[in-house]
Length: 100
Image (tube, rainbow, N blue to C red; front, top):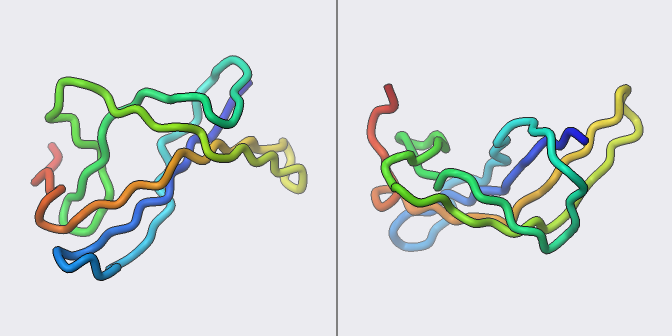
């Protein structure tokens, strides 16, 4: 089955003031049956200025739990979205620099 993996990312400043919230799409992947509470391994997230990007500088993957699975039956073909647990990124602390 094909799933679109999404994750809510809250971008905050050093004082924990919310700058923005975005829905980051990791992409569409084929996988066996998933359930809420399953774990997914993927790259850590970071910031390039105020844009959410993968932080591939770390040698180990990040582990996120599946919080919700949504099946959109209105669109054709139906889309199955998997929502991973939300993440908070701090401007200045999670900057990865330029991505080449």
